Structure formats: structure tokens, C-alpha cells
Image (cartoon, rainbow, N blue to C red):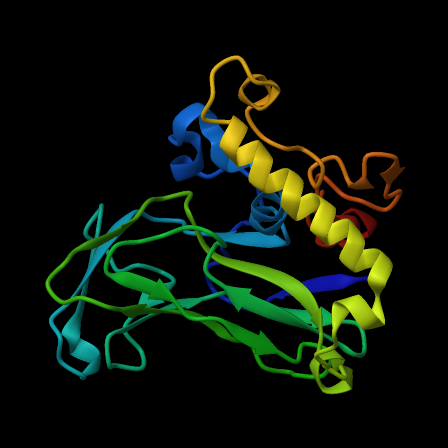
Length: 252
């Protein structure tokens, strides 16, 4: 499965494989946030576009394109960030024309599970299997007069592939679990009861739950104590973009 980035911008942000680490997760008690496997997988799901220059951005609250002030560390204009749309939207150029295989597009958002006070990332899905157009990464201010910081080397966008027609093809239904899938429902009830008891025991010194600290069944990919799911993932490993331009230059 290919994902191609064609450089088209005057300034190109570095593209890096997304990482699971988050500063706020590092600061949680005993780093307990990393026990949430779905959170870890989402954090590292795809690739990050990296901000090349540190800056502050502030919104006055007006709707015009001049209502956002951008102050870079060196005082020069930022090569990627601008106020383009107005209405408190901060825009980053991505610098690349992306190409995916037929039926696949890219979801572009802010780095997943990263928060910025007064600024909210906007997400978009782009049909990169046919489009000859690039796109922008946009953030919406939620408060006025609050300077928001982007560090040099900080991700400003996360991209990952999606199947563009998957939602249309889905046939969502609500069913009675006891009637439709009694075995699954039985497993759920057993887990729910054990979870309730575990949380009670967690508050009592000397219990097995207190020693364990947290239940690991999902993290370990166990549907129950005796069944381990072979395709369960505890990590995703996005590959770095290979620069094929160097091969062309060497051939010349």
C-alpha cells in the first residue's frame, strides 16, 4: 500500500512517524494514561507534519483575516502559518501534494490527544486518490486575547489513511445482545462483574487488585483468560517517508 508525498511548497515541513508519547500523559500519576492502549494506538496512528519555526498566535475576536496576529521567535514571517480564512481560523500550509491508492484518502487533524488552551484543531478528510489539489491544516480559536504557542519541532498536523467509501457501505444496526450473540454477551457480563469487583478491591490494601493496580486483559489482547487474539496490536509502527528524489539525483 503506497502513500506518496509530492513536494510542491516553497517551504516543506518535515514529515515524521507519529509517536505514542504525550507530555500530559507523562505527567499523570505513575504515567497511568499509557495503560489505555486505544489512546496509545491513536497517538501513533499515522504521520506528523512538523512546525519549522516557533511562534505565538493571538486572535482579537474579529472576523477579518487581520484579526490573528502571528509573532515568530525571529520576527520574520512564518513560512507556513497564516490567517487565511478569517473568523479566528489559523491556517498551516502542508507543502505537499499527497497521493493514496484508489478508494483511500487522508484524514488530517491536529496531533491526536493533544490539547491547546484557546485553540481547537479542525479535522478534514481529503480524497487524495484523485485530487490534484493540496490542502491546509486549520485550527479554530476558542478564546480571544490568549496567545497560543507552537514550538519549533512541534507537530501541527497528523495524517492517516482512511477508506473513503467505508462509511457509506456500513449497515449499522442495534440488536439485543442476549438474543443475537449470547456468547459475546456472556463474556461481557463476566467481564463487567469482574471489573466492578476489581474496582472495589482496588480501594482495599492487601487485595490482589491493589497489587496489580489495573486490569490488563484488553492490553494483552485476551478475549477471556484462556483466549488470546492473534491479530491484537499493542503498537503501530508507521514507516518514515523514503526520499526517492535522492535516487533520481544519483542516477543523473
